[in-house]
Structures are given as structure tokens and as C-alpha cells.
Length: 169
Length: 132
Image 1: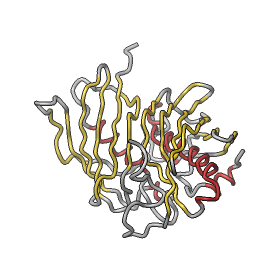
Image 2 (image 1 turned 90 degrees about the horizontal axis):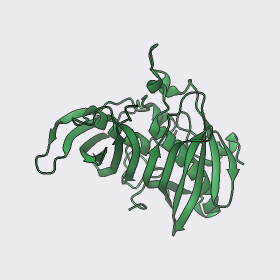
Image 3 (image 1 turned 180 degrees about the vertical axis):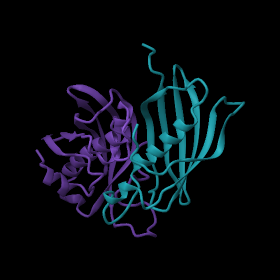
Image 4 (image 1 turned 135 degrees about the vertical axis):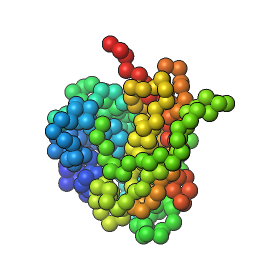
């Protein structure tokens, strides 16, 4: 279990891009977390009075971001103190399927399993559900840890906090 | 669908069919300014354009030039996506995309570049809704 304060302490993301509310289960190689979607999400601020159901669907790729942040919490836990000061990089993903739409009022439950770890790269799989129905399936996402420094304006790549040139195919 | 990205892709190469491969391709440019709301939290002291927002730029470009026959198809999957270099405020994204049929589905393959080189390679899968 990780509370909201614990999520904030573990991830560098902040509003409007901190997309995990709470971790409900944390095992040796798996994690479950929730993200509640409301009509007050900042992405809906620019919608007019005649917004359609389609307009109010939660953005597909933010659903992926929320899932990968959940994976990031597990990756940090698995990596332990050895990666203190290093940055976590999402390198690649494949076979990510979208199913039914997520709408305001829905609580998304993410589940992530470690599929395998190779050197300093971890490969995760899993998916997300709303009321038990699949909304997202994730075949594979790779995460790597790299020695980090905060990038200045002219820091050459690879940059901390971002996806790297490693991992994936 | 609502977008977390403000910047809209501009067409820099009109969509056209390649006679040899049959693919339907086009080129886009997207200017990523520091005004993008995602930068406030990604991350507070070191703005990096999130990888999923690069994907979002590709989606919007792809859906602006759907090939004849694919109209009405919607995003069903990310077949694959690799991120290579980071995108920062002030970057200009160049997007080259190519649509091709895959059985009943459509694939949109995209290369995204900044002036520092390849930023991402993305393959999206689109599917027609059943006319139920």
C-alpha cells in the first residue's frame, strides 16, 4: 500500500501530470493502483457547453501515462536504494490495446506485473480496468535506470526523466 | 477526444498516395512552446515534453489525414513506440507519417524528429467500428 503522500514522494511528476492517486497492492513483482477521473480534469477546461461523450472520454495516452507511472512506482521499489540519484527512463512500449472509453466518474484500476528484468532494464506488462471491465491492455513497457543529472537547457541527450535510447526492440 | 496538448500539427507535406507501395503519407510540423500545460508538472524544475504527448501529436496528425477508406476508424492500439531523444520547450517536431491497410485495420507509422535527431518511432493501429 502506498498512500497519496507516498506516491508524491516517490514520483517527480506534479499537477497536471501526476496521474496515480493511490497504490492499493504492492507485492514482490506486481502492483495495483487507482486513478480516479473527474469532470474537473484540466483537459476538459476548454470544452464548450455542447461537449459530447467523445469529448469527455479520458485521453487514451494519459491512460498509458497513468499506467506507466504505476509501473514506475513498482520499478523504484524493485530497484531499491541502488538507484538513488538515478533517473528512470521509459524506453519503449508495444502491444498496447484500448478497449472501452474511460469517462468522468470512473475509477481506473491499473495492474502491473514485472515480466522480466535484464541488467538494468525492467519489462512490465498488465492493464487497466473500470468496474472490472478492461479499458487498457499493455503487452510490454520497458523501464531503465541511468545515472542522472537534471538537464539544463543545453544538456545533451539522453535526458533524465525521459525515455531512453535503451530498451525495447 | 480531448487533447492534453495545445499545439496543433500543421501540414508541411500534403497527403499523397505512393504509387509503388500504395501507402498514404504526409508531413507535419508541431511547435512545442513553454505554454503547454503539461510542463508545469513534467517536471516542475526541468520541463520535458512527455513521451505520451509526442504520441498525442502523432495521433492528431494521423487523424487529420486519414486515407480514403479509413474514415471513421478509431484508435485501437499502439503497436509499438520507441522514444530516442527528449523533447523540450521550443522544439519543433517534424512528423512523417504513412498510412497503410492491414487486413480489416489500418496502420499509421510515424517518425518524429527534432533538430537533435530522431525523437520517436510510433506505430498506431486503427479499426473501423462495427456498423451495429
